[in-house]
Length: 516
Ligand SMILES: Nc1ncnc2c1ncn2[C@@H]1O[C@H](COP(=O)(O)OP(=O)(O)O)[C@@H](O)[C@H]1O
Ligand SMILES: O=C(CO)[C@H](O)[C@H](O)COP(=O)(O)O
Image (cartoon, rainbow, N blue to C red; front, side, top):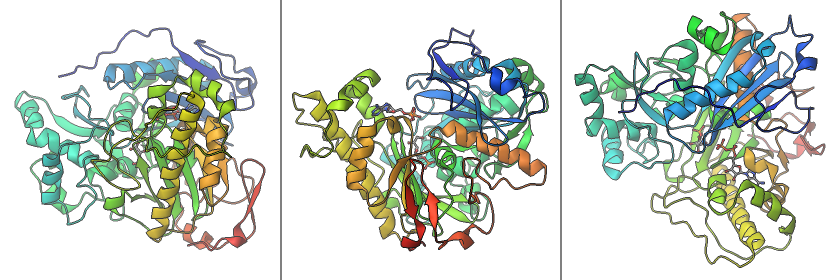
């Protein structure tokens, strides 16, 4: 059993920068000046997004217009230790200027999707080691899900949150905890972090709860789940992302320097937060997230769910975010190269001269998307003597995986692909971007906001707007058009013709696209 203690704050290895127009990020600076943003901020409202990813925690604070006011980051190096996650929360919060924090009206948290935590309802201590999204569950737990779920349900997969719950159920873990006087509940990465803010543990959102079995269309846990003996482990209150939840606790206010009435708004998964950050508005708009994994997400008026391909849909207002996530991605690159080496090798990569290497990038056997295959083997050999060629081969392989993913989505009848924005750490690689352009059929650009934390901050803003009876459907980075994120009439936007702005200054003629 792992107890979660509050550790003393070490000196942070953090990045803290004042604004998106500011200087390059600086390392190891616990505080930074935000004079320009804060001098006139006395009456401003700020919104805080917290992103707990695979490799680190990040905070971004935005103003009402969506301008980035402050940000901080803390790596935890793939740690699955709750103490490290909690410590990162202290560090990123401490790194934000007090004047900024005192103006935070609302906050929201995103976290890795399908990471499952068995915790105590009252103390939030871990009752078992966390089961991270990349830890495939054995067949017996998949079969246990299959026995209770509707035929063909995608929850019967080694990577679903429900299969992780089955691990604790079949293994008698939660029952033993209960017998020992604990009050076990299953929660998610983001929800656990949010618990340090609003003090609750049985609160989640549509997106994080999807892989545990929540049905966002009917907005309930299905009866086949609630009739199970373990139903008491399910979080009780499931909110729409961006819905006001409750104010932070007095303890959180004191610990983090946030106003006592700071609102916690419902969060989401890290991939959906990245999608929201990109500010896409039309069916067929897509985001590829090049983080530790490679996730593909597309706005669609049609829901697509195909477990054999690892395709599923997250609800977004009246639209769907259809997609899937390969288990290969940036984390595999870091098995071979340091971030510095990735940068140094980049100039010698020649996208226009394909290597001919036929790799499949995975950290370990087993793949989710674009084809569900628990036995899929990585293939990253033969390794050429030249590291630049090796890296190019890996990037080419991931570009092929991505292109296949969009192809498989198209075959499921989703809205026609129009353009792809790019988020995540891998978006920093211009050569990867060039290689992807050779494999993908539509314009590929960097997302104007590449951080999931920005998407979470938008949800925080959404929550506050809702308390004012307003709808936050206008994306701050766009001077025209509407995100319609949570609106009920977004489907009516399909088929809109004309020039849509594209992040790199290019443009995409929407009239050429048959949307929907
Ligand atoms: N120059 C680069 N070229 C390719 N990949 C990169 C580069 N810089 C960072 N990355 C990738 O970005 C990933 C981290 O992205 P990030 O979005 O922070 O991940 P996560 O949120 O999943 O922890 C790393 O796994 C790394 O491989
Ligand atoms: O690899 C992951 C890290 O979180 C996620 O499982 C992946 O991004 C899919 O996320 P979502 O459930 O939002 O589609």
